[in-house]
Image (cartoon, rainbow, N blue to C red):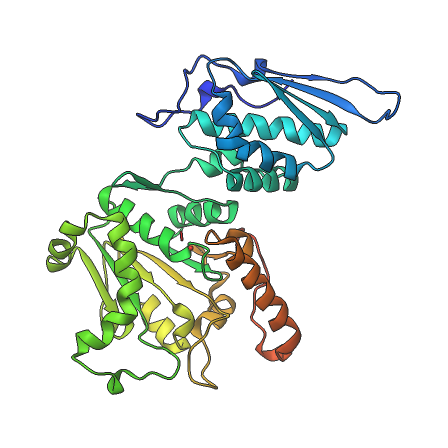
Length: 382
């Protein structure tokens, strides 16, 4: 009954121990059996037979954690498991979504991914919103693999963000902490360097924090700057062999520098990332964007709710959308609390502060975020 493509249309990750033979075809494994019940004429029954060469244990999760997540997502559906068969009873609309969900989860397993409750919750959200992207496509997109860890988007918003980086020269990733905007941009930069699409990576930040001025901090210029750039170094160590980083920096293949060091340069054949861009002035933002040279790509990331500029100073990130939104090959991605991939509470904290801001800030100071999707003109891993 399922209209999903057969599982052999999806390539498995090489060496993935959960990948299954490509001969299994999920479109013939799923069967919906409508059967009205006298006590509830609107109730239907769905029977899903999982092919024996696919792991039922992997589908259900350790200690049935995946099954419990499915049950929480469908509170009005009764779900039973026996052997390699899953049966469910509920409304036809809910059963249709459940059937698609199981199919998507099996495709994710076939691609070598382990399932968890987050994969279930994000897949259900996409299916209920009827997005054009399939959950299996979103959750199995790999950017780079380093030291046994694969970096990939974990939400639909993140997937659209990395896709936009592929297709646009200048990209803005705007969203709260924990949405992977900087981490994913750095992963795309490392991917581009490995693929020889660029010759170097440049990572930069404005050296601004609330109440701190570089001139009053102890130490040399390097000592003063390093604390502001440390998060970029930390992310870099997750993606590049730490032993090779000093060599790459010595040769200029990777450069980590404060924003002021960008002035007067034209940068060709580079992947350039400006982080914490909410702490730039409009003049600094213009200066940075005009460093773009031939063969280069720019990603600007920031959170317009966490501006550390002195009072009365306008944030360049807050106004840049109004200035550049209609220019072709410039893209704005807006990530939201739904894209937070840190602790569950981080997303709730972000939403709570957003509600507070909406009721306490003056209208003229409220942030401009007209869109919450990644479609033009408005559209972090950790």
